[in-house]
Length: 457
Image 1 (cartoon, one colour):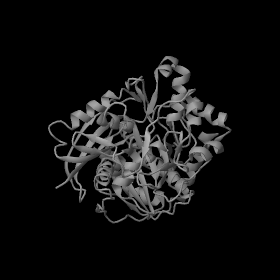
Image 2 (cartoon, one colour):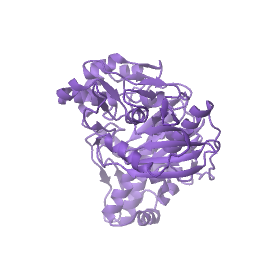
Image 3 (cartoon, rainbow, N blue to C red):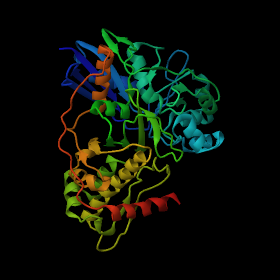
Image 4 (tube, helix red, strand yellow):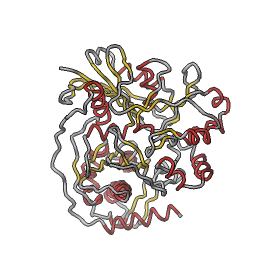
């Protein structure tokens, strides 16, 4: 049996899967936690990788690859040492910088034309501006800029080997999916001078080796998930994790001047229009904490309430929001009356609010020319019985909930097999039957839209 390994260095932890290169079957796995913060010393990621792979986990592995959280800023000095803790995607301190950069280039349309996306606080380019303005001594030391997966790949290959892929590069704010080239002018606009950037490799490229194992180019977490799922035409992936995302493999680059859809690339040579929200699974855990119940009890409560939660609407912007771009927003619970103010209705409103935001995301991806036929629902929040029951009607599409798996790590393993064999692996994942919509969510979504629009004014 030939073995390959996929590494998922996410916001919360490192997960490693060792798989059969021919079938994709997982034969070994391990994980280790990361600090819970919005800025993290990358050394913690390497420590977690070493912890997860201790005891011979990677023994006899022929190839490996890294999937990592998108957008995070890692600055290196001339000695390839980290200049400051990495600013992660969910660090919103650069929100003002995003607004400044949009205005400086001539508006959102100019950015959409340049890179297929309109930068928000999560994008690397805005974090570069923040460091340049607020930490001039760190900015002066910096000589190279990497993403989290780039840094881990460098650690595997050796100091100074800077590589990335189209998928993760497309989330920086200074690389164009349409042209396949860096926009150095945008990097310089943000930072004030040029920095070294990783070489962008093709999906099947061999970046180098780690011991006796080949190392693939790696990719971003959303791209890794799409690859791990084997997503094809008509599939919209909705992920309910730390963040919420809706994305689909597409045959052309997209450009959305509203900034709702990010025009990313995928990990196969195609494109991955994507909408991301800051508030996802933690909406459920926060509501469970508010009600003093566990997650299973929250599901039971939500399923006891009638659709529409007796008029309660939760706008779940508990950590600010990325889409719509409201970094300083807070959550709002509307429609409180003596009748509606019950634990069951609050639980139902939390699930409905979460899913209405993701339904908006699916609609935005559809507006870019994607023709969805089903939703693949993944992430920790997808395991909620209430989410599974309500999702088809609120999303307006048949919903498949694949078996729980580490799909980012699985995608990285699939990429490693591709680099090893120089052809895409034909791994087949079993999928359960789709759940069909069984209720009309028009009124519910209209109520949510009113609450959302009020927050925007």
